[in-house]
Amino acid sequence: MSQSLAGRIAVITGGASGMGAATVREFVAAGATVTLIDRNAEGAQQVADETGTTAIIGDVSDADFCTQTIDQVAATHGRLDVLVNCAGTIHRAAAAGTSDDQWRNIMAVNVDAVFYLSRAAVRHMVAQQSGAIINFGSIWGERGAAGVLAYCATKGAVHQITRAMALDHADQGIRINAVAPGEVETPMISTGRTTTPSAADLQALADATIPIKRLAQPEEIARVVRFLASDEASYLTGAIIPVDGGYTAQ
Ligand SMILES: NC(=O)c1ccc[n+]([C@@H]2O[C@H](COP(=O)([O-])OP(=O)(O)OC[C@H]3O[C@@H](n4cnc5c(N)ncnc54)[C@H](O)[C@@H]3O)[C@@H](O)[C@H]2O)c1
Image 1 (cartoon, protein in one colour):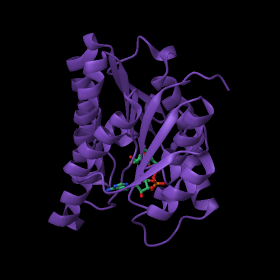
Image 2 (image 1 turned 90 degrees about the vertical axis):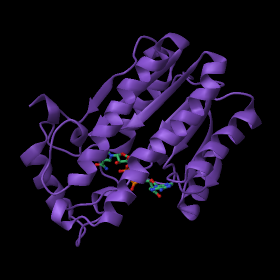
Image 3 (image 1 turned 30 degrees about the vertical axis):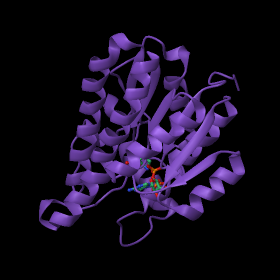
Image 4 (image 1 turned 180 degrees about the horizontal axis):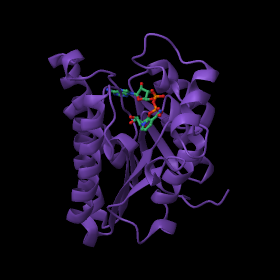
């Protein structure tokens, strides 16, 4: 593993689980100093203890919490180099099965939080004239899918936040990109379903929809996030990188 993030100060949301936890591990191995944010206190502390990072527990849909946490990390370390917006949730329903509260909740977690955290982070990055933000989009931010209306809407918004914000800061040394994963083997695969899919169910899904014919492992996405955060990606901004086993190539 190269030390491509040596000395970088990074904040990663959703670090207690799935791709967020994999990104924490990947960043630490690459030399970054990481603060992870998650509302799952037990999971966040476990990942922090395992990786020697700092966990801050809270809800990223709370604007004040987001601003205070970013300012606190920047004050502690004297700078902020990387923000990874990975925390997210899913609601599996069409419009008729989506209540006002469910709609507002997924918009708050998947969209509002990306705005609050990124706004707070770029204030520091503009002052430094350097920084990188990596957002977690989805194949469903580019393509429609049945039965996940609100989720598709939120990930489309994340892709557009990525593009628009990248343009606002392109000449300030700040790069803003997104990864758009396909189906990844994390706890979210079961979130919002009445039954947990079996290994055979997941293989059938992969055979039917994914050219590579398997789900991704979280580490396969985390490696791309690490690349986007590093100077190796110095000419990449405003890009939505599909990490989807060929799904959107179809
Ligand atoms: N799993 C997939 O197939 C897949 C595919 C494409 C995109 N994504 C996206 O990737 C990201 C990571 O997903 P994952 O599969 O690793 O999910 P996950 O459920 O394993 O992890 C999500 C993490 O976000 C945290 N979180 C959720 N709401 C929060 C809030 N309000 N405040 C603070 N923390 C909160 C959870 O506690 C959890 O630790 C999400 O944005 C998701 O939408 C997932």
